[in-house]
Amino acid sequence: MYNTTSQKMQIETQEKLFCYPFNFTLFPPCHDEFHFCKELSGNFGSQASSLRFLCENGFDPKKWIEGGISWIPHQNYLDLKSQKKIEQMATRKMPELFKYFQKEDIWPMATQKNGLNMQTTNVDKEQVGKWLNRFEQKMRDLDNEFEMVKFDDVPSLKVSRLIFEECGRCLQKLYKNASPDSRERVLARCQNLVFAQNPCRKFDFICFSNKTEAFRKLSEMLERQYLKQLDEIYGMTRLWNDLMHACHKHKLAIVMHNGMLDLAHLYNTFDASSTPRVGVDEGYLDEAEQKYQIKQQSQRSMYHKKESKREKRQEGLMPPIVIDTKYLCEVLPHPLGKYTLHNTDNRYGKTGLQRLYFKLRSNLASPVVTWHRDGRLYHSRGRPNHYSDSRSSCFHEAGYDAYCTGVVFAKMCGLLARYNYVNQSRLRFDSQKRILDDLIELD
Image 1 (cartoon, one colour):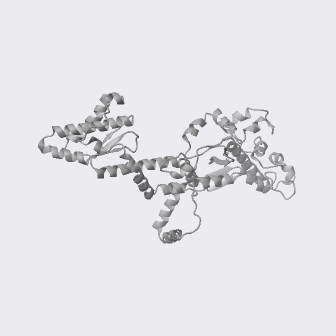
Image 2 (cartoon, helix red, strand yellow):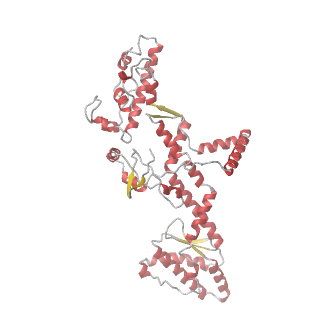
Image 3 (cartoon, helix red, strand yellow):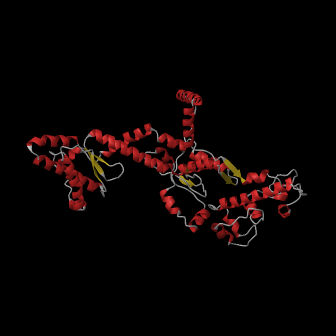
């Protein structure tokens, strides 16, 4: 999993697109609420061999290219989830919800201007009748207060305007047919009505009993929608944090080959702040002092300690145990690894995953690795037991490197157990001169 974006450069009036290919592509979708995401263009690059591998194994890259695999850094997620950000979003969005539903257009004493009808909007009369009957029942019942009337599943904005105007005609009819005693109550109810777009659906709208109720309900709906979108965009970051929490809870190890930089990149992508501070200002010092005082208080109180632990569990983490097979090969003694007191580098070759895999995969040391069905797809190609056969092209394809790393790690564990057994039993074995097969043949 990698984050990859494209960068555009203007060179001599010619626009060039530089793509950075990785096995997997992550890019966040751009929403108005999350303005910092606009810095990412949404373009991406990927190795052709990786896409071919994914297609052959039932993966649909087009689906993920169109929809995107969402993520935002953990610190951005916490900042955007603050009440201050939610209030700013609601303040910015609220005027847009009243844009197409001004009450003056359907005021009982006003004249209808747009002249929309069933024919021009091509809408089902029965469906419009259901919406209007529900609205009329609420308006007729003057003895009972109501919070809101929803007009759901509206197919288009033109239909919304038609229903909106029909509500106005309904109010005119109620006002004219009301008795002299109840006419003032009908007029008072009409004066308090507020119409607004439903934030969760594009063409639906809602009628509220009064302005206070409208702002309260709309604020709640905007907040729910905002948090839902935020959780969707959090996406891959949530998966990363859940994975790390599971590793800490169950003491699981992360096994990789030459992957420490990749792990640091993942942590930096998902957890580090995307906007680090530059310079030190007075406000930052005040904030740091406040954090220091809170930390001191938490050390004196068990309650604060529990709270800090709970907050820590909600934040991103690094794996508790990291095992790098390339590093193991560097530090383990010969014949398991490269480490030796003699100058024999040319004799033992390199520590790349491909070399280690072909060196160890057919070794008889326990544990015996049973090939997964995906592995059989690769081992059915080319000549067996040959280093430079066509199977070498499988490396660096999505998922296969992880499979080979697991095989190498399992075999290295078996060989290390065998090596320790030989040393503890004090068998005659010169680790500087013998080879790996000699270690396996010892009894």
